[in-house]
Figure (cartoon, rainbow, N blue to C red):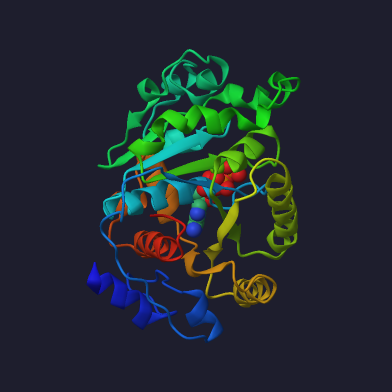
Length: 306
Ligand SMILES: Nc1ncnc2c1ncn2[C@@H]1O[C@H](COP(=O)(O)OP(=O)(O)OP(=O)(O)O)[C@@H](O)[C@H]1O
Ligand SMILES: [Mg+2]
């Protein structure tokens, strides 16, 4: 792993595996190169840090980030739980669950939201990665908006649901749907912080202010302590000036929030989804795997994960 660390900081925008890209914000923008230490053990037992992975824009890498950041944190010895909070249930698929099983409502987070007598610990599934557990999504999550419309304190449903598991994990990552509706408000209310994956594409920058407005609303109403742990530039293509321009723009607008780790565009992510496993095990030495490991270290060093 130490070798991997130095590879990242040394190489900047150069590639390691064939044409794979290990760019970082500092290397692309010509800033001081950063390195993040590897902390193998969580410093203390105690309540999990809950992180919502949010962006109302679709296809920006939320699910990919949950799976691979989760796997990278588990490699560092963290006990990680992923919650698939999206009716597309793509995280559940990405962790190897067959479509027929996903149709089953029992065992999903949707069932838990609707049955207060259910025991959440029975719904936890072990992934193929040691230390990485998850709770399945379900297509009926799409009905949440209408289903909970008249409920009192509907924003607190997920927070209450997760309470019995808080001491069993170091980190809980919630994969949100591409919307800022009831489910995402629930996720934000249950979280200590937010990670915002953002595709390196101009329109994506415009959508960021909407995410930030929603975070502010949640802070005012249901969760004053909510923080932004970082904006993660995804699908970066170092061959295009556009990717670099967008990165520069995000850095200008959100210098504190923009993470140094960048996730470059590579087909390896789609391939690993088809295989139903994280890139950290499917292509362990690929740039994608190295970048998500670096993200895990950066998040820990920022206090975003234990
Ligand atoms: N860095 C990347 N390079 C290339 N492809 C990627 C990258 N990250 C994710 N992808 C691919 O892009 C597609 C969308 O990614 P993902 O499902 O993670 O986005 P999402 O934000 O969760 O989407 P949605 O909003 O629909 O839930 C997937 O096919 C995924 O494999
Ligand atoms: Mg998704």
